[in-house]
Length: 243
Image (cartoon, rainbow, N blue to C red; front, side, top):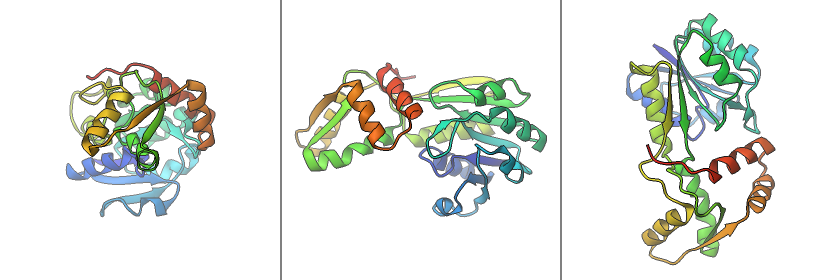
């Protein structure tokens, strides 16, 4: 089978590509900017297209039988409204199996996929472990981390694990029609995660709790769109237990 990976230059998408290649699969990636795909492994075919503009996807889908599909698109990571068009093109191209990486809420992509004749699997990961790397600069510069929801546990998951689950859903059997919550092994609060970092570094670190309003404003100042701000607030404020 030949697979098309959307979001292949993103945090989880890169791991989907590597996992599929490790299984001997033929992999094509979709990107709006081919230069961003330069760091992907050798042997990957690059196709230019945009999920927000389905007409650009026909060539990318040609000969594809398995699809890893995002539910967001564009620079603002907004929920895709083009799900029906994407699914129609995929079915016409002969795609048989699709893994969908949701963005924290169901939308047009999930609705179109689950109503189709495709063998679909929905992946619902919690917050990514790699996002903790955003703490590095404030820890170095101020010895502190400023976050909201300091006492809300979340079983953050490594992006490599998300990639492995997606690859298994696409290449393995028994996953059609399944919805998988993808979590790490242990639910920890931000305070507990910072304490673990402090222990590893051998130094004292401060946790400064932000209000939700302060956090939202900080995300906006960082350039995040309102939909993504709402998603982050929802994701961080809800308890996410381990599997």
